[in-house]
Length: 245
Ligand code: NDP
Image (tube, rainbow, N blue to C red; front, side):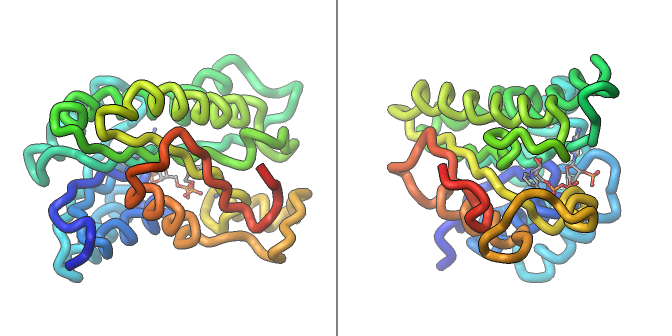
């Protein structure tokens, strides 16, 4: 029997890219999966349709995860349709490209809110249930951008992802004794809608493996963390050797 059979997972930003690969990997491991999206309903529905065709339980759920009211409604909706959320993957993100001189306060706030505050809001919304059941897995999708101030990504993105890793450790230490692990995965350049412009522009990030990564390779690291009860507060790098941490 698949080892996550009977578990319920939420993947934010699961309609495409890395989130879609994570949703599929979780479903293959037996979990019922809620696929969150912000605007691309058709993509999210196609993902859940594919999961159901393979015998899984799945639901597409719209919410802007940077908004508390949306997050609360989303969690309520998922729990009604699939059951209590036991695995949360905070994957939704944006990476607007801004230079040193053209980044605005609004850009900064939006980038922090969508990439970082969203993880706090989603975690807060699912924590009471995880703590009550004394079992939970939270995986935050960070980025190599947290550690290298890559000029191709905005300052705000690097700050948000570094903040996400701090959030990961802060929750991990508080929840370790309650059966809830909190970890991060920090991908390098991955071939998705977000990564493509950097790949096509010929990124300055040197990748010893010789190619960008795939969503599936990031998903494998997420599954490893979901399956391991003795790993918490860690960040796993999946970057083709671009940075040793
Ligand atoms: P994509 O741009 O391909 O997909 C982004 C996903 O996030 C979509 O599902 C999108 O939904 C969703 N999303 C964006 N904003 C919101 C929001 N406010 N509320 C809910 N959902 C939202 O990105 P990737 O798959 O490449 O990236 C996934 C994660 O991995 C991000 O956190 C990113 O920072 C990180 N990452 C990516 C790297 C890369 O090279 N690609 C490298 C390192 C980290 P919709 O489809 O509805 O728009």
